[in-house]
Image (tube, rainbow over all chains, first blue to last red; front, side, top):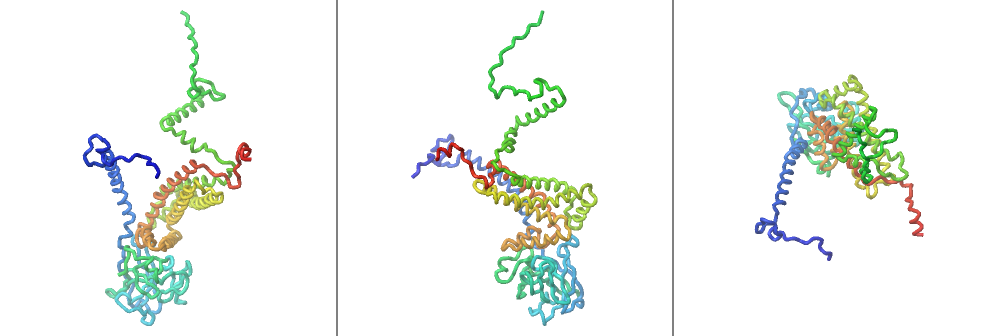
Length: 221
Length: 273
C-alpha cells in the first residue's frame, strides 16, 4: 500500500487544538464563514439568473391556443372544391401573422370520420407538413402542391407524393350565429386520427407520436 | 571668490539592469530638444506609467513575440483572417444597430430599406455586414480544414479543436439568427423552414422550436428574440471563446507543417550512431 501523503487529522476541532473549540465541533469557524459567504453569493446570483432564464423559457409553457374567427357563410363553401380564406395566426404583426386556410363543406362520400359539431366544414391549413412552406390548392388536379420540395396532398389533405411526413393539419370549424368559424388547429396522422397541433416535419404515425410529444403551448380542444 | 570646480566622483558600480540605457543612435543625451523628441518622450512616459501599474508589457510580449516553427506559411494566417472577419462583423453590426428596428409590423423591413437607400454610406456598411457574414463562414471552414490537414488538432491541442468547434456552431447560430433580421419574404420563409428543421429533433425538438419562436407560432416577439440572440448573447460568447482560443494558441504554440521532419542536433546523431 502506498504511503499516505498527508497525515489525517482528527475531524474534531477540539482534538486539533484550535483555540475556543467546542466539544464535538467538526466545522471550523473559518470554514463556516467561507461557506456562508459563498452560499450567499450563489443565492444572490441565482436570484437574478434563474428569473432571467425562466423569462426566456416561459413561452414554452404558456398556452396560446387560437380563438374562433369568422370566415364566411355556410353556402360559400362547396363540398368538392376548396375556397381559400385568410385568418390571423399571430395578432399584432401585420401580414406576417396571417395564414391561408382552405375550406369546403364536409362530404360524406369522402370524409369517413364520424361527424361532430367541429367537422361539418373541413378546414385545411396552407402550411405544408414538411417544413412549413405554403401549399397551393390546384383545382385542375384536385391536389395541394407545395412549391418548396414538391409534396402533394389529396382532397383530404393526405400525402400522395413528396417528403411530407404526415397529412396537412386541420382547424376545428363550427356554425355560430349563421356564420362559419375557424378555431384552433390540430394535427392528424395518416388514419386522420386527431392529435394536438405539431410543427411541420414531425411524423405522427407509429413511433412518431412519441418522438414528437405534444407541447403545453398549444393543445387540441 | 572663484567658483571651485566640483570634484568628479566615480560612478558606483551599478549592475547593468539599473544603468540608464544608452541614447538611441542619432539623439543627444539629456533633455529632449525638438518637438518630435518631446512627443516621443511624452508617449514613452505615458506607456511607462501604465506599464508600471499593470505589467501589461509582459503580457503583450508573451502574446506577440512567440517562437514559430520552421515552415510556417500563409495557411497559418487563416485564423487571424477569421478573427478580423469577426471584428469587421462586430463593428459594422454595432453601427447597423443604430438604425435597425426589430419591429415585425413593417418597421424592421422599412428600417433596412432606410439604411440601404437613405443613410449616408448605409448601403456600404450593410453590404460589408451581409457579405462579411459569408466571408466569415468560408474562412472558418478554411481555417478548420488547415488545422485538420496539418494535423494541428492532435495532442496537446485537442481542447483548442473543441473550442473551435464551439466557435463554428456559434458562427452558424449567428448566420441563422441574422438571416431573419431584414424581414423580407426570403428571411421570413427561411426562418420558418429553419425553425421547423430544428423541430425535427426527437423529444426536445418541438420545445426548442417553441423556445426559438417564443411561442407555438411565429409571433410578435420572435424577431426581437432573434435580434437579442444575434447581437447580444452569441457575439459575447464568440468573443469569450476567441479569447480562450488565442490563449491556448499562445500557450501551446503552433505546429510545424506535416511535411517537415524533425531534425535532431548533429551531436545527438553522433552519440546514437
